[in-house]
Each structure stands twice: as C-alpha cells, then as structure tokens.
Amino acid sequence: IDILSQVAQVDVNTGLSAAELVKIIPDYDALMIRSGTQVTKEIIEAGNLLKIIGRAGVGVDNVDVPAATRKGIVVVNSPEGNTIAAAEHAIAMMLSMSRHIPEANASVKSGKWERNRFIGVEVYKKTLGIVGLGKIGSHLAAAAKAMGMKLLAYDPFISTERAEQLGCRLVELELLMRESDYITLHIPKTPETLHLINAEVLSKMKPTARIINCARGGIIDEVALAEAIKSGQIAGAAIDVYEHEPLEADSPLRSVGQNIVLTPHLGASTAEAQVNVAIDVAEQIRDVLLGLPARSAVNIPGIYPDSIEKLKPYLQLAETLGNLVSQLAGGRVDY
Ligand code: NAD
Ligand code: MLT
Image (cartoon, rainbow, N blue to C red):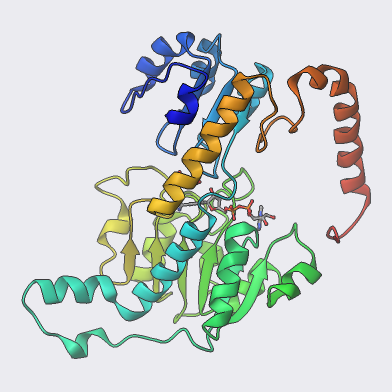
C-alpha cells in the first residue's frame, strides 16, 4: 500500500462477488489480486480505465489474459517471489506424508500414545519424479538431492544438459510414473496439463508410490486420485491445490482417510513470500502507472509503452517466425 500510495489512491476491497467487482471496476486504473479472485472477460471488459492487472503470485490461470491483451491491459505477476515457499511446502508435504505427521499429531493431541500405528518410510535413496523442472522444480531438485534422493524429471521444454546440471535424468512421463517412489508436480495449469494425471497415468505408478500436487488444481483428476488411493493402487498423496477452491464439502478427497494429506493452498503462505510478491507486484503497478515498463509482464514485453506501437509489427513477425521454427525444428531447445 505504501508503494502504491506514491502514485495512486489505494482501496482495499476483499471478499467481493464477481458482480460487485464488475460494478466498481470502471473507476480503477489498476487491479491487484491473489489466487482467490477470478478476473473474467466480463470484469476486464467493464474496466474501461484499467491499465494493469497485478497478480501477487506466480499462476495467472485466474486471469483471462487473452481478454486483457485484447483490451491493451498489461498483466504482471511475481515469477520468483514465492518459489522457495512453494518448494519448501512440497518437501514438507512429502515428509509429512511419509512419517504420518498430521495423523500422529492429531492422535497425541487427542490423548493417545500410538507408537506402533505410525511406522513411516524414508525418502533417502528413493526416486523422486519431478514433473516440471522450472523455478520451483529446480529448487526442489537441489533440496531432494541433498536428502539423498535419486531424481527423474519430465519437462518437454528444457534441455537434457539443464536437467543433468540439476542432477536429474530427463525422461518421458510414462517412465517417470513407473519408476518413481514420489512424484511431485510443478507445472502450470494449461489446456495441455488439465487432467494430465488421470486414471490411466495413475495406473502406471507403483503401489508403494506417493504423489504431491503443490502446483495447480485440475492437473490431477481428483476422482481418479481418490479411487487410486482407496483401492490401494497407490500408497498416498499430498495435495495443496484443488480443481475448485475452497475444496467442496463433498469432495472425494476428503473421504480418503489417513493416506492423504490436504492443505488449503498454503504453498506461498510464508511471511517472506507474502512480502516478496506484494512488493514485486506493487512496484510494477507503480511503474506502469508512471508510464514505465513492467519487469514481469506476462502478455507484453518489458519495454516502454511508447516504444510498443513502433515495435508491434516486429513483435508479430518474431512470434510468427518462432511458431514456424518450432514446427520445423525437432527436439528440445539447447541453451
Ligand atoms: P515455472 O514456469 O518456472 O516452471 C514450470 C515448468 O513447467 C517449466 O519448466 C515448463 O517448461 C514446464 N512445463 C510446462 N508445461 C509442461 C507440460 N505440459 N509438461 C511438463 N512440464 C511442463 O513455474 P514455477 O514458478 O516453477 O511454478 C510451477 C507451478 O507452481 C505453477 O503452476 C504455479 O502456479 C504453481 N505455484 C503454486 C503455489 C502454491 O501456493 N501451491 C505457489 C507458487 C507457484
Ligand atoms: C501462486 O501461483 O503464486 C500460488 O498459487 C500462490 C498464491 O497466490 O496463493
């Protein structure tokens, strides 16, 4: 708020319905949100003064980015502010699940002392399959390696060399699902990744294997996951993100029992990450309102708004050339 107050009047409005947001948005030059607000086409179209939408976090799947782009609205995020928090949450989920920490904690607090009920498993020398070797996946790889885990990774967009630098063997998804003892997802939610982990893919996992999703709800088919754990097809899961948030009262995940650990989208919820993403996005909103470029725009390159008009035809040419080259050239990009 201090940063934004240098250039604008700041109103803090939380818990608005979509209809309320549509009603008030015409008065605003900028909108700042976390993951709980869906910025739909209707909201964007009503935002006649809107110049920028700031997402205090990584995922922009709750913003209709194409609609914003069509209206000339810059969408910015904080690509790195919560990387460490999310990677550490995935590690915490893996260890909690392996050592039954949530159930053991509840048991002791209820007055019991059940040492034999909570025999866990070690992660040392186990194989961890990382789906998505980007910022969070890479940080997690380093931490898991330090714990003595063997690493596999599936990411069609990174080079074998990069994976090797991180101590990972780059493999196809099917092999990763078959060979891993733990599988952790760190990919964006896109039309290609929706239900990427479905009943058929889950059926490739070992019966002793466990899966972690601290990326986005909807990447795993929740009905298929609940069924796979209940039937003993896989050993367990730890889930932070859900297809519909808040998680519905009758979600099949709630009735799986002790072989699932559920947290309410806490990946980025550390004191440090909240400050990082807030500063990152507030500074970008301030800059754009001052006519300066945004450093982490997801729909417009980081160049001065005045130059964008002149560069537009070249940007379109470069995008078309890129699309053509990606179809002509086989394999991965080396860098
Ligand atoms: P990133 O962009 O740095 O990395 C994503 C990686 O996924 C990239 O390397 C990309 O090549 C890869 N990828 C894309 N499509 C793929 C596909 N179809 N198959 C396999 N790999 C694919 O992103 P990040 O910062 O590491 O974030 C990863 C995810 O974590 C995002 O979905 C983000 O929204 C989510 N996230 C969640 C929380 C939380 O609170 N739980 C916090 C931060 C980030
Ligand atoms: C993100 O994408 O950054 C996370 O989902 C964190 C959040 O905004 O809650």
